[in-house]
Amino acid sequence: MTIAIDASGITDTFAFVIHPIHPKRDAVRKFPLLAPLFTEKQIDFLSAYFPPLYISEINGVRSESTGKEARGWFVACPFTPTRMMQLPVNQVYNKIVGCGHKAEKLGARMMGLGAFTSVVGDAGVTIANRLDIPVTTGDGYTIAMAVEAVRKAAQVMDIPLHTAKTAVVGATGAIGSVCAQLLAEDVAEIMLIGRRESALQQVREQCEGKHASVEVGTDMHMIHDADLVLTVTSAIDTVIYPEHLKPGAVVCDVARPRDVSMTVAQKRDDVLVIEGGMVEVPGPVDFHFDFGFPPKMAFACMAETMALALEGRYEDYSIGKTLTVEHAREINEICTRHGFKLGGFRSFEKEVTPEQIARVRAKAHITRKDWTPIRA
Ligand SMILES: NC(=O)c1ccc[n+]([C@@H]2O[C@H](COP(=O)([O-])OP(=O)(O)OC[C@H]3O[C@@H](n4cnc5c(N)ncnc54)[C@H](OP(=O)(O)O)[C@@H]3O)[C@@H](O)[C@H]2O)c1
Image (cartoon, helix red, strand yellow):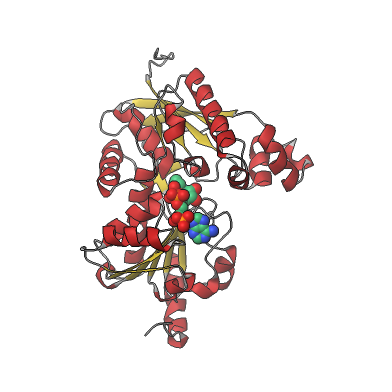
């Protein structure tokens, strides 16, 4: 392919595919005058007929180790997660491949698949085969950052990892299975929660022989005993509710749409829910688009795409459903070297302050007195 060089001489380029999660809220972000005229249902239905959409240019991603800059673009796949699950998978692939063609025309040399565009079908394999530019789901760095966020949150909540009971919800998934393997190296007990017993047994085998004892199950109430919960299902609706959680528990929600119900924020001021995967980008980055994060912050999957461009690794990267611990470690090393790092904690789209953490700890100290484990 011909490499596009702009006036600044930047040759490292990428595109990242985003999509609406809440049809109305996200459509209003792009079309503030038009979108309010439609109902949520209408927007969701009509989205199937929208073409891939150019959103914005991304400038100022600069490597701390080489000083090189990368330039990128957001391209939107108009489908919501619900639409992606309802429509035939080929129709969804076609739309994402359309985003890829748009990215190629813009001059991108790498394309990242955001949120549900990375979940559908075979997690990027078919899409990569149908495009000239390489593709990543960004799942490798998402795994690394989710596990780091759990470790850091445990530290601030005074939960020693080596004695912690830990649950991974969505443990049979591309992200969940590797997170489980990494956490099993540190924690005392790991509970793998999923829907399919046979798939859970496979993940159990991958987790055994490390520090943690391993348990599997399909009942969400198992997490009632967990000190730490990492949740990363591809469920459309929330799966974790106030009654599931132990006082003082840390829940890291990596899923988009989120797994933890808003009622947890409303009813459980004795647990710490954090969003997994917020990363600080090196350089004076400007996304020219508000995707709901503070300045300089990106999702880990976006960060992976940027880092691969800075690294000049123009090859299919985190694609397919079977990633490995070694893969997550490699991309973590690449991202860290270029200056990407875990951003601060956020909970339900708001910053988590040290005062809030202190309040959660104090409240948990009280509510723990009335709490009994489900299993002795
Ligand atoms: N924050 C970020 O930067 C970032 C980056 C990439 C992806 N993500 C998000 O991460 C999530 C998972 O992605 P993935 O690629 O790992 O997906 P995946 O490979 O399809 O795995 C999904 C997991 O969720 C489970 N699951 C699906 N529906 C469920 C339900 N209704 N109740 C309980 N469990 C359910 C699946 O169980 P079965 O195996 O039994 O079907 C599987 O374990 C998605 O929400 C995605 O948007 C976030």
